[in-house]
Image 1 (tube, one colour):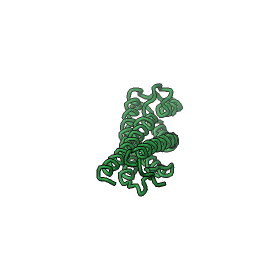
Image 2 (cartoon, rainbow, N blue to C red):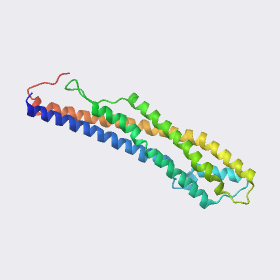
Image 3 (cartoon, rainbow, N blue to C red):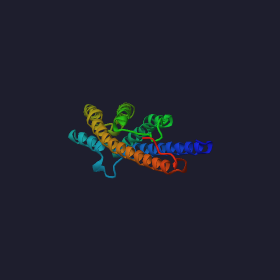
Image 4 (cartoon, one colour):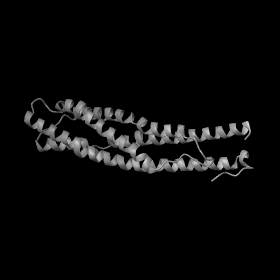
Length: 222
């Protein structure tokens, strides 16, 4: 193969890798910053806010009225910090995938970058583990420290402690499980979208390679 042809082929391979990397980065950004973030952000209606409604329900059973302004501030801070922690997880998904792409060296002319569902399951598990850890950290650092602020000073201390205890238990069990289950669904959808996108890019790459002038007199090996 002539030097010029080799240069064209190398550029084609580089463009292919860059295109796949961009697909991975965009897919991960959408998963973390949109899909998963939407599960944590404050819902448009109070009735849809499971966290707030749980606290209000517990308070109602004890005939206590919560300070709505301070409650909103506490939950807003909780969500903001949790979202910041979740945003940092993009690298957990991007790095192993991009490293694999960068290191890819085809042994055959028709070999391409392939990704299977099983390849992503390990990464998905790591992300969910990190999310769980982030929830527990926010529970301890924000909720445990801030729940006392949503009650009036005159309220029965025994009742407020009971509400806080039951609420924290809810956050560590039911809320956490529901959030992780929802994340699991989001991940499965995005994983399939990612694989399809990479496969489409593979087809474009092979088409371009097959129809390139440097291969007009040479058939591709299987």
